Image (cartoon, rainbow, N blue to C red; front, side, top):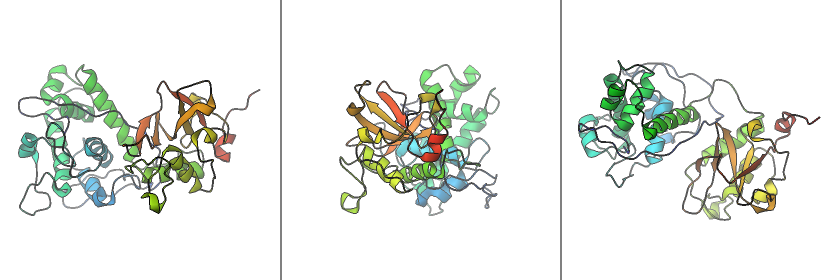
Length: 333
């Protein structure tokens, strides 16, 4: 884990902020789990967790009241992007990024093979949930939200949370708690549809299914390209999947519909970025807005399709490409 509390109270660097994401998929509530891992919890949104890990995250995310499947998924995504072989410069290991000392204290043999293997998600994912719940017990009497305090303890150490009487006044820790709680929402299946149209929702679902795919300049997602995309290739394919044809390049996609203001953005809008905020022909990047100030995009060579914030100095504007969504824009008088 990049941020862990060990006996000495040490903490190491955390990741960056993530996203409040609209997801289309399963809108049902999960039933109670068997085998003693037992409170009912909201279903994970369809496609947000790799199939190999979905059942584990759903089950162990209900281990205690302080966590949920979506919260556990958010932590795992932040820590390793679902890579079971991840290894950090601080020797944090596996899908849950356990420091060896923390693993020695909290690792469990969840699959019953006689080994506690930090590199095996069948052990590491349950261990991450167990560690979260242990931290929640340490800070249960601290004022405030127990999950927020648990996350703060995960980042800065339980002793600091107890001493501060809540989330300590550390910018890094406060941002860590905010980031995980925001990302948590992206993994939970919504109970009602929030999107402006079925087409926008479908385009988001398509882009979401490509999370983690490596970037390729000129990539259109074809088999000969290994299913890889560049930024406008991803947005074009996402909307093509729901019957809307867009131009190929970003600055042409900007002209594919009306332009909502920042405060009018809805999930599914295309968002654009430029080094020249006066010239739409200078647009160099595009993503699909998913809500909460974030988009899904294919950023650049060497990166993967991921969540990114939109409120950056190079934010140019947005385009609404669905007919239903365009009708929702205010009419100038």
